[in-house]
Amino acid sequence: MTQNPSAQPAQSPFPQASIHVATTSRSYPIWLQPGLLAQAGERLASLLPAKRAIVVADEAVWHRHGQALADNLAAAEFSFHILTVAGGEGSKSYSQLEQLLERALALAPDRQTAVIAFGGGVIGDLAGFAASILLRGLPFVQIPTTLLAMVDSSVGGKTGINSPHGKNLIGSFYQPHAVLIDPTVLTTLPHRQLLAGYAEVVKYGLIADPDFFAWLERHGAAALDGDAAKLCYIIERSCFHKAAIVGQDEREGGVRALLNFGHTLGHALEAALGYSDALLHGEGVAIGMVFATELSQHLGLIAPEVAKRVRQHLTAVGLPIDHRHLPAVAQDPQSLLTLMATDKKAVAGRLTFVLLDALGHALVQRDVPSATVSALLAVERVDGRCLAD
Ligand code: GLY
Image (cartoon, rainbow, N blue to C red; front, side, top):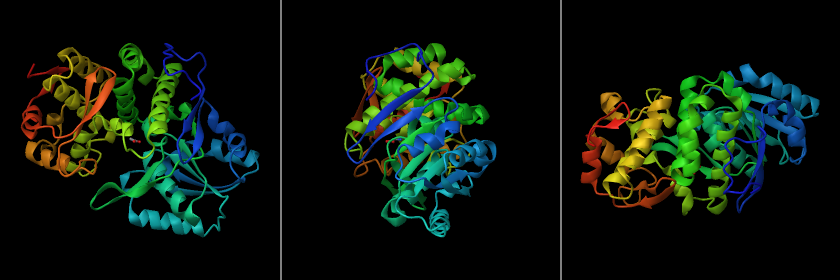
C-alpha cells in the first residue's frame, strides 16, 4: 500500500491518488485523478505489454465520454477498436457474452491485446469475464464510470455474468492490470446512481473505518452535491479499504466476506424484485446495512446509538432504509427468508449475516435465528427512526 492505513486526513491534500492493490495473482495500481481520461494512453502504454486494445464500452458512456478516451489512446499511438454494449443488468447474459466474444475474436486479438472496460459494474463484470477467457486470458484494464464501480466492483477482480439461477453465478476472479478513475465523469451520472454507489462508500466506514463514517456524516452530502475534492476523497478512501481487504483475501476465503455487509437482505430484495430498476444494487445495500446494524443491536453486539446513526445518515443523504416501502413482492418476510437462506454466500441454508460488533468493525455471523430476522423484517423505519425502538 502506498498509504498509511491509520492516516485519516479530513480531505486529501491533492485530488489524486495512486493506491496499490497487491493480490496473490497480480499487483496493480488504482490511479485516481480528475481529468485522467485525457492521460489514459500514456498511463496504459507504461504498463501494458503492447499498444493494442479492445475497448468494451457502455454505449451511453461512450457517447458522453468516449471521445476523450479515444483521442488520448490515438495520441499515445494505440491501435484500438471500440465494442459498445448496452448498459443494464441484462447485458450480463450468456447471449451478450457470446456476442462480445465473437465480436472480439473477429478483431483477431493476440495475447498482448488488452481489453479495456469503460463503463459501470455491468460492463466491468462482462468485459472482465470475457478478458479472462479470450485466448485463455488477455490483459485487462478497468476504467469505471459510476461511483459504485469506482469504489467497489472495478477493484478486486470479480468478473462474471448472471444465470437464470441467479446473479453472478458464472464468473472468475481475474485481476485487472490497472484501474483508472477519472471522477469528472461522475458529473453526468444520474443522482440516483451516484447515491446508490455512495451506499458502498458508507459500508467501508461501517465495517472498517469509524473516523471515515464520522467524516461522511459531516461531509458526505457535500460530496454528493458535487464538491469535487470531497468526492475524490471518498473514492480514494473507499479504494484504499477495498485494496487492503482484497490484498489480504483475494478469493473471499475470509476477510473479503465482510464486504458483503448489507448484502444478505440487499441481494434478497434485488432478487425478489427481479433485478429491476425498482431497486438499484446500492439502494438494496443501504436497506440491508440498516437491517444488519439493527440485527447487530438486537443480538447485543452494538449500542442502539450506532443503528440510529446509520439510519440517520443514510436518510439524510436520501438513501432508502426500509424494505417495507418497496413493492409488495419485496415485503413478504417468508419469501425474503427463503431468498436469504439460498443466497450463494449462505452455507447449507444457514442464515448468514455480516454484523457489526462496533462502529467500524464487522464479523460474519452464521446461524442467525430466523425468528429474530423475521421479527425485525416486520418492523418499520421512518425518517431515520426504527419504530420498534
Ligand atoms: N463487492 C464485493 C467484493 O468485491 O468482494
